[in-house]
Length: 138
Image (cartoon, rainbow, N blue to C red; front, top):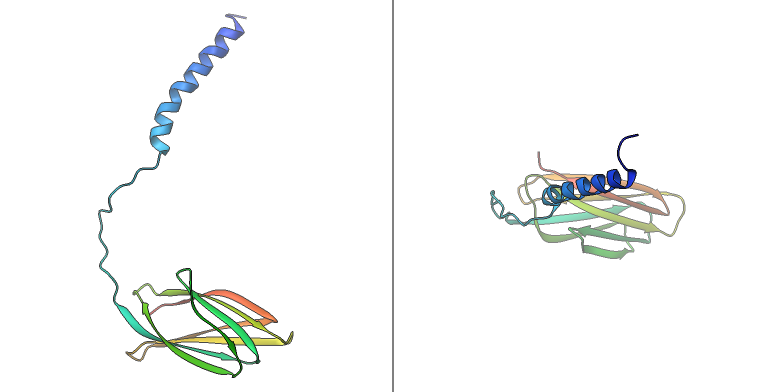
């Protein structure tokens, strides 16, 4: 064996400490100004329609982390208008529904724009249903 183990351990420790400096520079968070400025998206008047196969139904629709619409539905069809930023990439809505019945039930969410474009998504569940639904203009 050549050399002293404590000296070798100290050299390895020094080498690892020297590697710490470039590793820190590579992984530190830095605020960098955005090189691409995206144009603001104009809000559109969006009509949301909700249809359920079982009443009463408690539903909540969330958009960008904020509750957009929450209601206890006592009828099978409801509709409401909202001003929503609707980019060409589309929107994601988080839909949660709860029925008193444990039988299979459905909740249909429809999105309509003023230009006539309409799309719908359906959630199915026994007692509850929850999902993220995406509406994208093609």
